[in-house]
Image 1 (cartoon, rainbow, N blue to C red):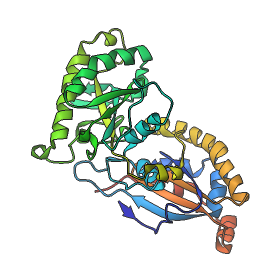
Image 2 (cartoon, rainbow, N blue to C red):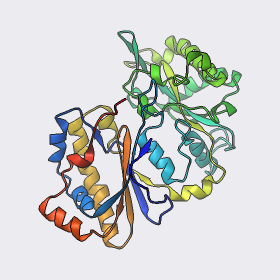
Image 3 (cartoon, one colour):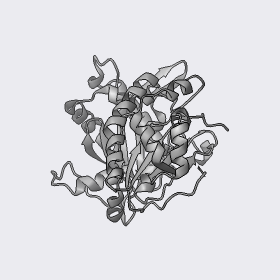
Image 4 (tube, one colour):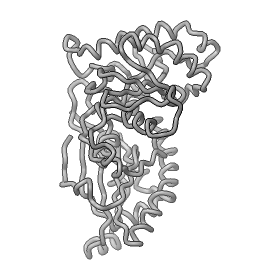
Length: 350
């Protein structure tokens, strides 16, 4: 990851708003559309803000991207975590949050320094010899289906020393030392793409697979065979035929203190970006402009420093509120910022 500018310390006294999928990777004509976007509050923010950091992915051999997308790394950095690619402990964070709630013991796991992972039930679509990961949201798994599959699959995980815990329909927490330092690809990296480069251990040579990666690949194969004939798939237009493991890692020892730096994360643009729906994405941006950026401007006007993190597929940009300089005021008046220079980013090149 290449840092182009020097970043302000993550513990700076300012509220942080982080918007995943807010930068669009252009392949030609999209830039002219972005230049005309009706986003008045974003334009007003850019007229007075200062860009303090730009971080761009470096090409990763065989993957051409990082396992953890930019918005996850920026989120982790905002909380003071070490941004270790593929080992950002989102599942451990969720387990710790459950552990702090008044929840029934059979549902809430006991948070511990052990490694954690998310297990997401999903559909692997096979076409022309390629396997693509579908968006799990389209499966619309209800509580009854979730409970049935949890009961059917739990013992297989337990045989390999992995304790499963229900979390949300179609999404479970898994606890095992295997996950403490096992890099895994985020769902947001893989949805809609060929899974082969993103399977556990795919970033290393086949003969260098770790025992944990070998175990999980075998377990995936076993669960595919189980799900292939399972009655829950009878009549479903989209079958539940595998799972994805992600969010692996263990929480840092000072996680409670670091949690105080939690940014506001806005997921409004995610669905349209994953679908590569530029018009839908711009419509969602208008909602963000009115309901997220406008209140930020109001807080700045009230004397509350703000930070905005715009994230794309391969990079993220950090802006801090600041009183506009004379040059900024003159430039904004005579040459307002063209949004394509902010929202449009080029594809990553090797």
